[in-house]
Length: 106
Image (cartoon, rainbow, N blue to C red; front, top):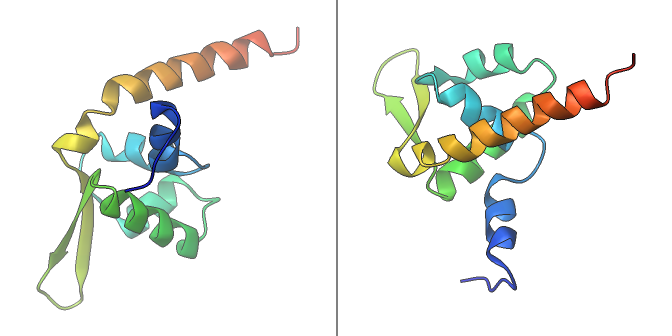
């Protein structure tokens, strides 16, 4: 296991980057397919979305559900550990709103 000087380093490694918190926020409302997430985040590339989903799954925050059907169907959902991020994400969202208002031109 990687060693950290401070617990915040471990947290940032798991949820850091431009897209992970946004993905987690979208998954708070329920299961989503990859294309649904792409529509909600039009600026993310397919490659980046796939990478971020794989990392969130590897870190134990989301579940990947693959259905045995044709055409293939895959959905992503927050698991219980991922749902434990909700209070943190809510605080970040609130802080972001305050930051936007503070820096809004008069």
